[in-house]
Image (cartoon, rainbow, N blue to C red; front, side, top):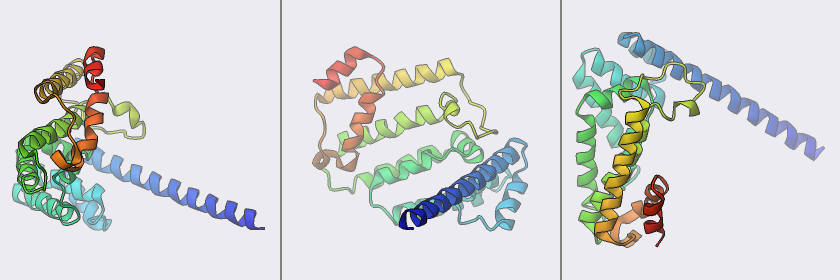
Length: 231
């Protein structure tokens, strides 16, 4: 009887998760489709009418919708609200990296078109310089490398095949070959940084981003450089 009850509960949870996931995909595809059609006001109406304004799907889509509908002040107000929400829950500068990680068509184009990326990175630097680390300048440079490492990947279509349910992804601004070149160029910047520093940084030296150094090494294409990191 106990096993039957457990099986029933697991099945119910699995079903609920599947329904929630389907609803999420439907919402994202609807918002992406509206943006690609230039129906910015429709995005605002959708989020207002569906009471999704507290949902991240709408919060980030609204930033792009307001910006491209001509309400730049509204877009920046929403972005600053999001920054406040993030920083109120974490004192780590790296926590703002989530602002570059949202793959919604309207918000993604907002990042590519506006000065938002530069603005966010300025805040990242300001917060990082207040962190109790011993290698502030090197740590700040490392933080930039970590964030840019993800940026050059997220801003291309190379990883779109990992999202088969997304039907209306923003067309890439560069083709696959240029995207690969951008990733390789960034790997060179990372390699130059570690050749100059000639060490792996500790948490005391650079803070919580120390563990992300392995991610940079993993993304290296050149086996000779990987051997350098291994040593």
